[in-house]
Image 1 (cartoon, rainbow, N blue to C red):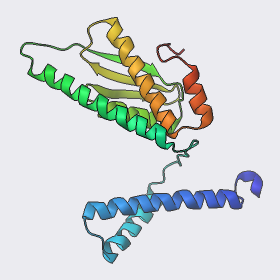
Image 2 (image 1 turned 90 degrees about the vertical axis):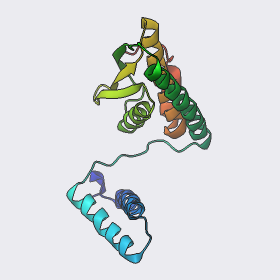
Image 3 (image 1 turned 90 degrees about the horizontal axis):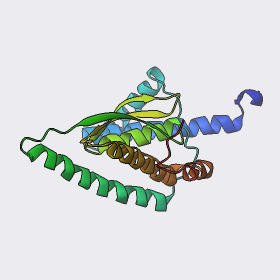
Image 4 (image 1 turned 45 degrees about the vertical axis):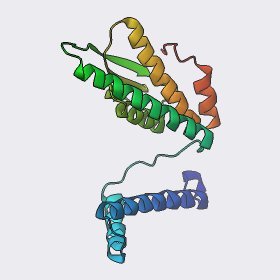
Length: 192
């Protein structure tokens, strides 16, 4: 019976994952209603149960661990990039007669796990001037629309920035093996 992953450890892990999902959904429910009451908690529990029963999603396991230092480095750098990109896009918007050139680039990630693809794609899309157009899940490739590209060096720089972002995300939540893997590849080297 334990050969199929149905042993006590698998049951405990599954229960923990489901409990976390229920707690998160209940929290979102209560925040959306804006009131903590027994009725909202019960409604949140019922809504969470319905979501998990009727719309089951594959479990996403965090293979790594949360590193406070890496998380702070990611958050600090992300805020700086967010402000800088916002100012850059604002300058483009108010500059009379300026027509920015855009490009769609493919960036292969070093760590192509579902969690890393999702976190990197979300972070890239939150920064003004970049937007995820498509994701090749099997190949670990993000297709990114980049605003205001003038030369091939701008494209290379955009790829480098995305790979640096991936490196910071892995440093914040990745496993030790993923961290070694992402650090072993130079950010400016194109992956096959």
